[in-house]
Length: 432
Ligand code: FRU
Image 1 (tube, rainbow, N blue to C red):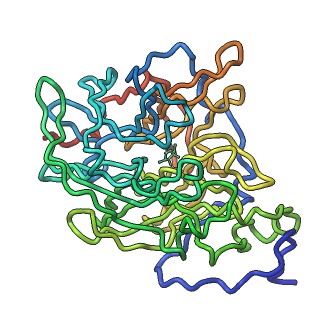
Image 2 (spheres, rainbow, N blue to C red):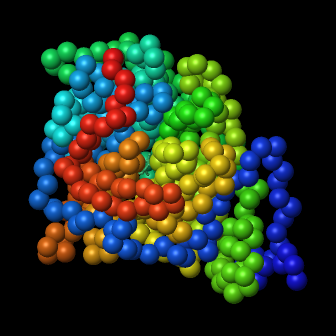
């Protein structure tokens, strides 16, 4: 019977919430994700466990470069600048998340990085911890420093933080200068919350009922080159109104005839959120419906970011094996979706499944948090690689950079470079 799904555990599809948006949320369906497989084009080379630490006293993980408003990488008097989550190395590997701060790294040659410390006053920053974000340098030389304020300094519940610590999109600003000692961020602005989950498009922590922590995090600044309009992308989950699978979350009609969707798949309700920037300071935001959703497919579409090439909009996100919905699996990797019809067109999975870079089968957690830069260089961090005895060595430093070549909807890993290397390229367009 048309409209009725043979989905175990789901009996009815509630009326869908109406949206006024001029675009439809794209879908990463179970049918697409079922095609995920490791190939020579998407499997990263194995990482040697004999690595140096970029900041020996710190765990270092999610990393992002300072970008100009147009997405090109910024250079400050010859210095490249990157930010990364940091925590003291004498804390346990797992404990680093609850002590995360954002540190600054600088490099003259794009290969050797110097850790320059945490550029802000922790007491002034929002959140018990500061999680991933992005950084934009405007035309006047102001750094707009976007991050996730996770938890509150008051009412912190260490034993139950995953269920009680809200994530909010936050920002502050700095002036930037450089001399022989390195790069200086000064004149720290006030820290402010830009956006919180609304409970409809984006799940609040109170609504969360999945086995995995909910998300409203990882703000990424993006200027659409076609219109000049600016946006913040972020990781979210769909709000409670959507606690079911729509037919398109499963796949096309033919696929649905035989699809077996285990009960509980609808609780894996990841999405890539978006808000429009409505002021010059990138601090006023207007929430919009998600750009992409993976309801019934995967719970987490983390650190979303965008690269535009030849009019194609490439939307990248990182995800994990453990966040796939029941009945599906895939590697820890970076996944990509491409729209040929502009920023709000239909995003189709790259390489048919979405998979762009995967950890190798024998070393499935060696790296994570890939960030694809404007010319498709890919930075990431060393996560939990195994040595030749099969023992896990915790990383917490920059991983070897990869280069991918993108041709329309397909991608291939073409090169491996030094740890944390960011090769000079055309997109270092502006000098300050
Ligand atoms: C990805 C991530 C981000 C988050 C950070 C917290 O590695 O989960 O989404 O901001 O790690 O450590």
